[in-house]
Length: 68
Image (cartoon, rainbow, N blue to C red; front, side, top):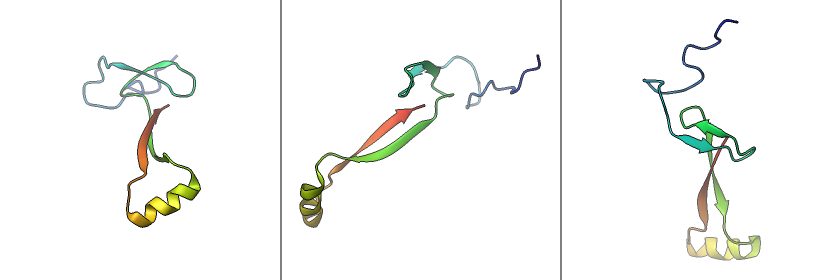
């Protein structure tokens, strides 16, 4: 069967060995260059307190990175 991609689906220049990271959905170990990282900002407080803190100019969100 022919190979679909020369790179094997990995990004980067060398396409050699990369450290492995764990998938957030299924727990499978995937090469770091092959994993898709999605960063979202997550609120740490409930909605009532959020509006009060937003008026004062407080940063109340933190980035959360998931790898798929």
